[in-house]
Length: 134
Ligand code: HEC
Image 1 (tube, rainbow, N blue to C red):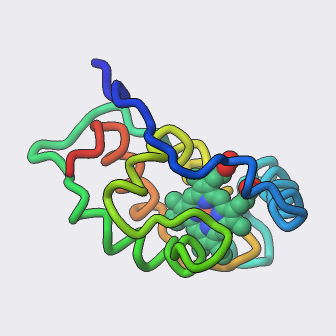
Image 2: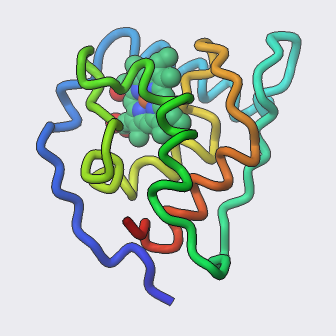
């Protein structure tokens, strides 16, 4: 089954977002990945399995938007240097970059203590895996 057959329509080059903060949070994320995001920080444990099948009925953007609004758009609002995740087009543009970030708990950044659950991560990943229906 081919799922990610759409091409991204990125308007914003990724390079723009590489900052010192970014590098630091990548290091934290790498450590977090190595130690399964556990430990005393209270971070969400990161054992998110990548989805291999699609539920019926399919998930739609409206099913994941509340999660993204709650867990991502505090930073990805379009008002900061982070690219926005505020509507379908913006989220779907990044369909290929979001899964590795979300499944390894690199996003939301571990040091931001965003209380996202494994179920919420899985829901976003499943929707993307299934071709991100609008
Ligand atoms: C606390 C602020 C914050 C929150 C919340 C947050 N992000 Fe981010 N995000 C960032 C920053 C800062 C960067 C830039 C980091 C970098 O370039 O390494 C980033 C970059 C990204 C990237 C691009 C990484 C790359 O390689 O270019 C993706 C994808 C992403 N975020 C997805 C998400 C998703 C999905 C959520 C919600 C589940 C989320 N983020 C929540 C701050 C945040």
